[in-house]
Amino acid sequence: MQQAVSLMFSSQPPGTLTAVENSNDRMSVAQKEWPRRGRILMPRISKTNGEPMEEQPLTGAVALVTGGSRGIGRAIAHQLAALGAAVSICGRDRAALEESARTLAKIGPRVHAQAADVTKPADVAGLVSRTEAALGSITILVNNAGIGLFGPAHEKTEADWDRVMATNLKSVFLLSRAVAPSMIRRASGDIINISSLAGKSTFAGGGIYCASKWGVVGLSGCMAEDLREHGIRVSVICPGSVATEFSTRRTKDASKLLRPEDVAHAVEAIVTQRPGSFLSEIHLRPVRKP
Ligand SMILES: NC(=O)c1ccc[n+]([C@@H]2O[C@H](COP(=O)([O-])OP(=O)(O)OC[C@H]3O[C@@H](n4cnc5c(N)ncnc54)[C@H](OP(=O)(O)O)[C@@H]3O)[C@@H](O)[C@H]2O)c1
Image 1 (cartoon, rainbow, N blue to C red):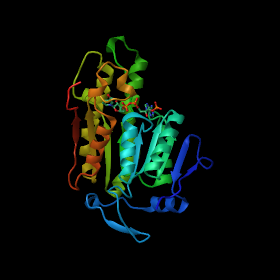
Image 2: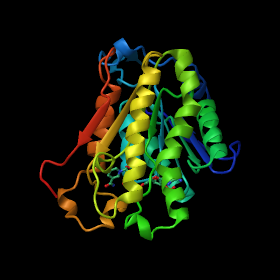
Image 3: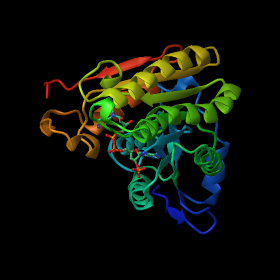
Image 4: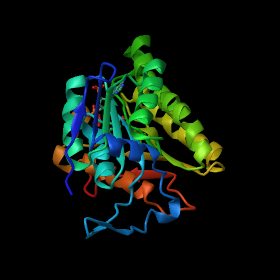
């Protein structure tokens, strides 16, 4: 049965938007347990109003996707909602965030959107705590927010370096550190970091961006080793060029680029991987070379 979606502004701190089916459902979502890994690939049949209904594979999961207001993050958030997860998104542009949240709420009604800058520890702490208050414990973290800055490193400023590193690399540390304790307590969780093929290669003009994305690959591999004994799977996705605002500013033939949905599909593969194993690193390329 289609539930009415209520969008609540008044009781939320500035910059937050939460959509839930109704207050009772919000309670029940918060109390739900993350489905045990063994159930992820075995959807159950349940009955609602006498009608058989297939349970979605991520029912009960709570995903936080940074940079979910546009591009790759938006596609990932939509895909996870379509698979049944409650989804929280963040970004700095509140209008873009609200627009994305309203679209998301049509796919899955358990949505939380919050204006937050992932480079700021206080914003990250507030994002995690309000997401968990609205939706329940975070079971899937997708560190997606990122910026591009290209050109010879020797021509860039220290401020350029700091901005790219804080957004693309430090944010992964801040967010992962904020969600890891509760994942460790539950001995379960997926942390998925969006790096780039620029995190596996080098090219002229890529200095600062490549350094940040190589850093994400290195951090992800070490986090995977630290957290696997706690039942937490850490994965890194390295896409080639994807058709978003980020890349269409550059010169490649957009029709041959990856689509944001291709990256979202890789995230789906990771979170629905059978229990007892994980996809540690995915390199994603378009079939036709751009
Ligand atoms: N597009 C590509 O070709 C490509 C290829 C490989 C990897 N990637 C990686 O994929 C990720 C997403 O890229 P995209 O192409 O989807 O870029 P995009 O279209 O520019 O979207 C970036 C998202 O990140 C958010 N964001 C940026 N800085 C933020 C901050 N400080 N705090 C919170 N949110 C922030 C943006 O929202 P606000 O601006 O409103 O904050 C936006 O939602 C990035 O990590 C990028 O490096 C992209």
